[in-house]
Length: 489
Image 1 (cartoon, rainbow, N blue to C red):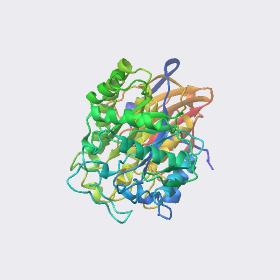
Image 2: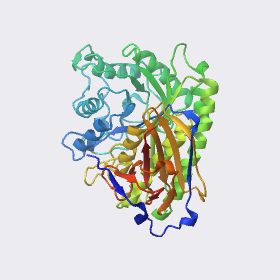
Image 3: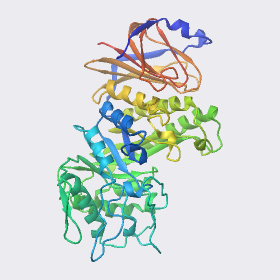
Image 4: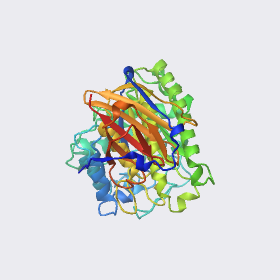
């Protein structure tokens, strides 16, 4: 239960010089734009999401309680037995179709997101479909990571029928109750789930080192085939790891696609990473600089899209931060989670300003050896961490359709703070974040006195935001704090 308390924020202001206090300025009458943005997350399949795994229950509980749309689900190649339903090529006498390890995690995801638009992406193509000198092995243990599984750069069947048949059968398993395999045997699932969005592959610029031309051919072939199974679904293309102009130029040009192929939505990723060998006290500058550079790239990509395919939507569905390689093998400092949460709040504000449709935080579960720095659930105590709570705070309070109003912070030397005002029929909100590893005071407009504030910072830790009532005309933000101020109209 949320507890609202009144505090005297002056008691928290130790060491902050009032003479240099920046002032938040908001012109509620000056509407800058209307938000089209939906905040959400991605769920990457891995052993910690298997039933009876330590993180399973708390993680899917968090997904259900987030209650978000456009959640992205990606069974991924490092765990082949959890991601690929046909691990061996069919022979004249048998096939290897097996969903026994894939289904539990997938069904738990579908149950947790029931009633919401979701984006499904079984991104891993069976490796045997690619030409290689010899078969690429995979671990017998489904929990053992295998970074080498995605070998090969050229499909062995240039017609792509082998590829499209695999995905038609996989999608039919979850939407049509089952499928008939290569030997004419029927496999019954009994599932009739709706798949509103299907994303075609993941990071093809890295996985299998595809060219935009090759990827576009695969996209067209898969969309053509899958529309026969899920005719009402929309399709998401690209899923790029990097922001490569030549990919956007080629893929977004309708002339490079077969007639009738929809370009419903594109996707790409950004991880604002610390530099190699960098100490944590320097992370704040590296990650926010890289986040800012990414926003410049987004503007460039959006201009390409508006020129070539203006009705295509954009889903930036992997947003996160990375620690340095050296730190990934060490305990991650507690303040890192607040830093990463603050970076997501920064992304949300700036991407909303740029009209991005879906803003997806990455990822639900990470753990040592499996990108621990992007986890939204604490892999030590299984509680949602600051990254999750900032996402939920934004998702619950700032809706698509909200008006962005003119907002600024004066005396913001070094760009240490960021704020954005929103208003809708339910009231007015200000999202405010501290980009630095130091406490900062912000003077607020007098009209906000008495407003309710939700704060995610080092004090809230792995718990829901701390809710307070504003009893003064200023707020003190702890290092990397994210605050949402809410008032009635």
